[in-house]
Length: 305
Image (cartoon, rainbow, N blue to C red):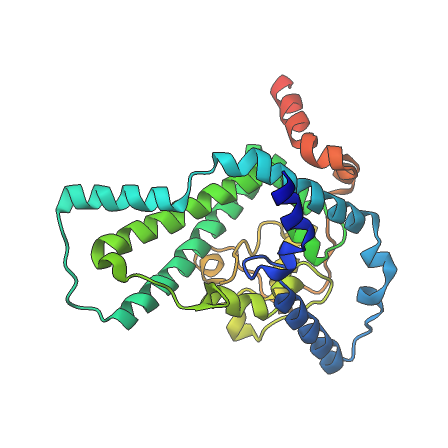
């Protein structure tokens, strides 16, 4: 208990490159925001206002950020199977089915590159489909509503996620990373490794530096149209949070999956965005208790009806 508390209050989220609000990602997003407002000459009053950062929805995000940390540590993490376990099982299955495989085609550098980009793309692909299922399967939507109940967006809104959803994303991560790793170990053995920056997959690091924390913000930072067909810009994710566009831009870092499966919305196609759920639903998500228990209550009500 003391170890977990000390780690948290030592601001591990700010010093861990695997976290969205790592200090470098925050600084880079601030620089991009300043650049955006300098180039567009738009008024910065909205994002500098205490009405945004101290909005009831934003304050609820801050409180929930602390509470959900301990919920995840004590109730979720112990039940999520590790990627190592999955990798071992996949590798063992392939070995027993097809016997030993010896690589004599790819060089060490090629193997590292293939493993790095495969991990990134497979993880993003599975993220896309889980996110889409959270919207299209009514049972799962009840839990994902918690995230979309934010009326204003700040980087901490990223963590407004119900524990059930966190569990599903943790399981998705273990399965996708473990599956890819198991296959690569079978084909290439101990030679596998990834290209990293500060210990993070180089592709994930690049996307995190280029505006990841603007995705949940009121800075409509977009990419050129041709680039948004391939990469998900901060504004495209903001569009996804807009009430009329919940069925668009499910992708994490790349927009390829949205383009292929018909859910892509480009930034220049949307000018007005209103965040949050429908007005008659917003009142159900105004307290810490409601963020945790409202999905279960809604499901019970539906079952009775």
